[in-house]
Amino acid sequence: MSSKKKETRKRKREDVLEEVKNCKQRGGIKGTKYIGAHVGIQGGIWKAVESCMEMGGQSFALFLGSQRSWKRSPLDPTAANKFRDQCSQHGFHSAHILPHGSYLMNCGSPKKDVFEKSQALLVDELRRCSLLGLSLYNFHPGSSLGTITTEQCVDKIAAAINHAHRQTPAVVTVLENMSGQGSTIGGKFLELKSIIDKVRDQSRVGVCLDTCHAFAAGYDLAAEGGVAAMLDEFHQVVGLGFLKAVHLNDSKGKLGSNLDRHEDIGKGQIGITAFRDIVNEPRLDNIPLILETPGRPGFEYAEQIALLYSLVEEK
Ligand SMILES: [Zn+2]
Ligand SMILES: [Zn+2]
Image (cartoon, rainbow, N blue to C red; front, side, top):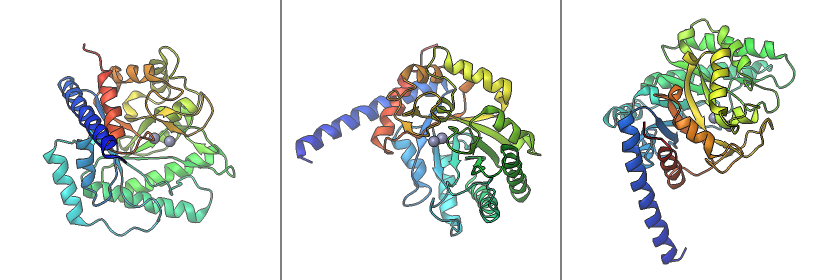
């Protein structure tokens, strides 16, 4: 990169961060929209807090360990304490932090060994949440792999959740709606509801709505009033009391395409109008609104957070 180009990029980044700071203050005064992003944990789990601050976020998501292995070394208590300290020092409440579960996990798997490993990993992850002072834990419900019925798969997922609840203290398990790709469960709100119905402790189950997944599954957020219509339907089928978080992603795939392919905000098939509606929707107050767009953590996320805060209308 030439030094001239470097200079331009640096200035632009500073401008954007300044803009985020201003927008964040506006959001902070309203105190209702907690926009943030999925941040990395390289170099130590407590670094997630710093990364979130750098991009002007008011909420964040993070993985709790490696995405590649079933077995993980135990969480270092010093690292956990550092994370808790950082959160309290910078005023991040646990209701605005949404750890994301391992992609290896399939709590609905028809394969006995995978189901058992998934169940054990779920317990391990909820324990990590407790050590980190976190109260929410988001994961993809699971997949039938096409060899068992949806109902059998739902039973397995609920059994894994109930088992994990018995093994661990008060963390809330947050099911994510899916795009309906392949034989994954949770593309339809009704499937989420059928899992929730089988969870014994209803105070410890919730939903995270992913906008890309919802759109790909056929909920038309791009239509006029689409966001409100989706929330109405969610309330009818599941109940807004269960809504704990939103994943903010535009979609590369078309409406109903079942494709789980995230796009940067305003650059995909959903479009900017839906995101304006989201940041002005009172039913989405006080919950984490988390970006999982292709933009790499850092500059691009800061830009998108600034963009979203700039869409918040003065009341
Ligand atoms: Zn998501
Ligand atoms: Zn996704």
